[in-house]
Amino acid sequence: MKKTICLLALTVASSLYATPTGLNNIPTADTVPHRTVAIQAFSSFGGANQFAANGEGQHSFWMGFKTGWELGPANLEWGLDSPLGPDLSGPLLFQTKLGFQPWEKGAFALGVAGVALSDIERAGDPFTYAMLAHDFGLARFHLGYGVQTNGNSLLLGVDRTWKLLDRDFNLNADLVQVRDQEAWLPSVGAKYGLTKNIVLETWANFPDQGSVSFIAKINFVFTF
Image 1 (cartoon, rainbow, N blue to C red):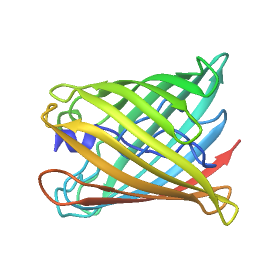
Image 2: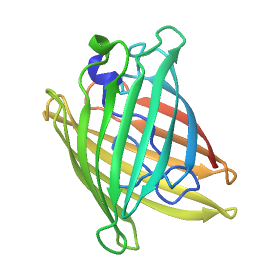
Image 3: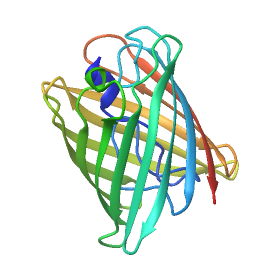
C-alpha cells in the first residue's frame, strides 16, 4: 500500500479555470496561478491505484487543497491532501513544485509529492520529479521523469482542450512506468469547467494486471 498512497495526488488539466497542475497519473510543468486556491474532493473505485488507500476493490475518499504564489520569474505551488475514509484515514501528504516558462508555449518544473507529515511508515517514500511541456497547437505534450525508492518512472502525457457549451472541455491521456519499470500504466481522462469556480474531473486506469480503476473528482477554485 505504500506505493498506492504516495505516488501522486491532486491533478487538474492545463486549460481549465481550475489549477493547471497535472493530468491523470502524472504531474505536469504547470503550477497553480498566483493567489489561487483549489479545494478538491475525490474518490477511488475499482482496482488498485495510487488513491486506493483502503485496498483494491474498496472505495476510498480523499480531500485536499493546493495554492500558488508568483516568485519573480518562477511560480511556486504547494498543497496538502489525505485519504479520509470510509475505513482508513491518513497519512497527511505534502506536495510542492517550482515552475518556469523557459520559452513561449513551453514550461518546466521540478517538484516532489507524497511527503508524509503523519503515518510516515505507512505512507512510504516521496516521489521527486522533473517535467517538461510544450503546446504544439494540435495538442499539448508532456515528458518527465520521477524518482522514488523502487519506483523510478518515465512520465508521458498528452492533452487538448475544446469549448463545450462555452466551457472548457479537456481530454487527456498519460502513460507511467510501474512495478519498478517492468510495466506501463495507461490512463485516459476528461475534465469539464462546469462554472468558473467548479471543475469536474474523471479518469480510468488500465493496468496490465488486475482490474480497471476509476477516479471521480470535484474541484472548487477561488482567488484571493
